Length: 307
Image (tube, rainbow, N blue to C red):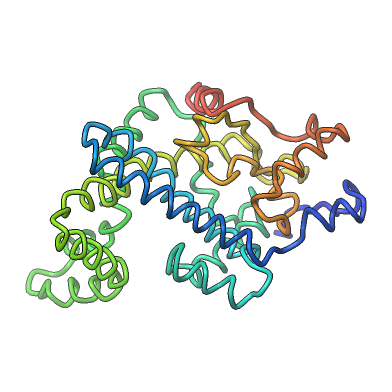
């Protein structure tokens, strides 16, 4: 099947508008990455000083863990820094070591968005689902089942399917090698916090958010972006959804302008911090009325669980 239909920037923006929207920055990406880590550090500090706040900090940190992924996503498009080498190193060192694996996968998603060849179609195709099914998914997310399946499910399947006399240790060794960056980085984090007598802070305010709130907000993000969008549609203004987010949703669900997903698919050259400006310009030109836009995440969830 041919690639998904595209729009041309000059059909919507003046040359000056587009120049400002698509400009790469040598400092904004660095500032946003630093902001993400500062929020995580501040939330951890608050949780250490006031342990009763830890449940709230878990949600804030889990949301910023998603934020790191969103910033790696921008880096996959070369948008995090004006220098491509700095862009990639910034993402690899501070946002996620999977950049080189994620980039070709994600660019295929953009090329074939909502078409049969879209590798992310499996995430949106099942919707709408029943409220009971959505509730079960949320419970699996918040109890760590989704995290365990995504991180170690492949190993468990291999161990269950091995022949009777086949040794388990080679399979485990191969999995450890594949997960070595995750295991080493988290082992070092746990070790450093343990030296300070704060091992529990790493467990409760890094690993716990990663295993619970991060899978949930990642699911909500996937639902909001592409669920209930027509497959094999021809209108590039309706290949993805923009979800308006209030300050609470930005704090707990939608970091770093990820909610402007329709604009991102229409104009992949716009850095995330310029997406709100693009939305306002499109709104002033009457284009937003033709796009797929919903007023909030609650509305999207209701639509996605209406069957």
